[in-house]
Length: 435
Ligand code: UDX
Image (cartoon, rainbow, N blue to C red):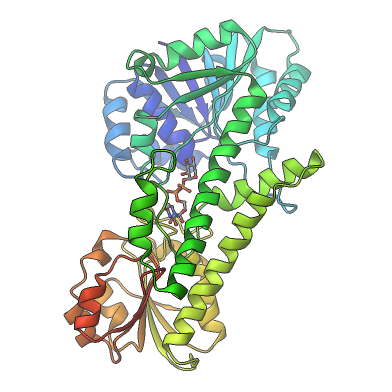
């Protein structure tokens, strides 16, 4: 196994570091943020990710996982270094790789023996070359090193299982030595027949964007099919069941909803279009996926307006779900933001509840009434909107819901409620493709 340092203990770095230590490597997760490292050394996990606490704990106990704010030392003691810092969306829609290049400079300045430098962060195609150039610029003693692009495919809320049981590991390398090092790092997966895809650096960078953009496209496609089902009276659930049973399509990522959110799809689709533009190419399909996604958020607000006969003023609306999807407290680009902002603009009074994302949304939209349970969020409301597919909301007792509300109107943007029950209880309702 290898001595590994992960630079950046955010969502990708922490999960990857803990996962790599679980594979038997000795891992140091390092970060310049001293508070974060202090919390981690006290056993406090600063992000919500199911089963991450157990994974970290297990490996800290077996002394395969440590945390340090001394990035310099953790660079010098490593055989393999993973760059796992944030690459947020820049002003022009490009991914901002400033922090990645700062880390590359630090690595160049502290190279003391052969290492493989690996980028986990999602970076535009061609960034690998820039990272190598920066390291070389500061590599005073001309120490030998290799580079590897090893993109992550982690979903929030499922990141630990996605890391421990990936469909494939992509390794973009320019030397056999680098590949051999990475094969040792991922040996646990390799001996369990997880495909290791060895390719060039640029190809590995491209795979990440192509994967995310395709998944976003698939979601926008099924959302538009669902919208058409609304108009012709078809049932999207049966449509997706039939589509999904075709092996070429697969049943996954065919759930219609209020539009995709999160820190990846919105950012990566725009970044891919920017990369294409730089090479004088248009990506009409990805462009359409972004446009369809924006339209989906508008469509949800219009559906609610119709249910309330065009009048939002002073109406009491209960929003159930704030996170961009279930099993996360992350509200970045959540469709709930567009829904709530639109309702505020139209004079509605809003109560909101999310099992774990209340505090995250409060930072963005402080001025609404956040409740600690769904019952108080719906009490005395003129209408309720389900924005996130939490299992808690799937199990809501609809007769109790009706009693609590002052008018039985509900918009289920995740198609999680039983429409037979809704009809039986005389709800006025709408959803996405299940008229
Ligand atoms: C995504 C990719 O799945 C992951 O591989 C990549 O590494 C990071 O970006 P993430 O953004 O965490 O992961 O969540 P994901 O489960 O992909 O959902 C993204 C958005 O699409 C959410 O808003 C979700 O509600 C929405 N979605 C997903 C749908 O609307 N329908 C679906 O069928 C699936």
